[in-house]
Length: 222
Image (tube, helix red, strand yellow):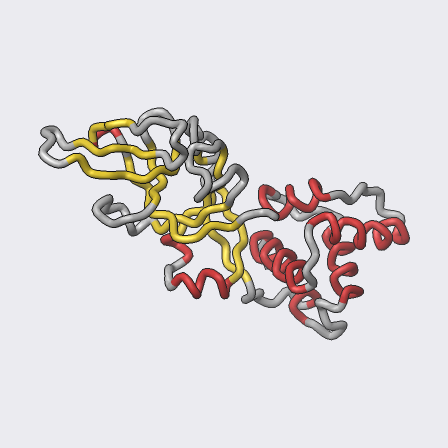
């Protein structure tokens, strides 16, 4: 079982219990302490593994013990002991940096993957390979999109004649905006529109932008 599958499994089992990352950290710490394993569990430690981890951490076994004790994993569950395939989550490619709702994200860094519920992805009727995960920073698209929102973008949908919000490279960075074609322009132009009235719309040459896809789902922290 590779690291992406184990990561997806951990997220899926944690969410079954309704635990956030801090909850898992608090419940895993006693198991590590009892075994004499020196680690300081906290929300950031769990988040790093779930989102950016490239190596299996030694503390993973204690997180598993916490999940078992919480009742998410049956004692005879062979998915961990035998490292069988996990089917409750799928991995979606994630833009390395935020997508701006204001200033744009640079997109610098290595592409990585993040786990999403298989049921959620199946409900969208979109192949995981056609989706891109992005995180919003800035307030230019409020109230529809807020800082910290997690968006899923359908990379097949690049035709700006379709209504909706799009993720695009605007020449300066990755942003999420509404796009409106400007009729009768040559060379062709579009209007890049922010929802927040504090930000003015920007006319751009079609050749200056690159549409990544249309936003099809938004997740928000409460």
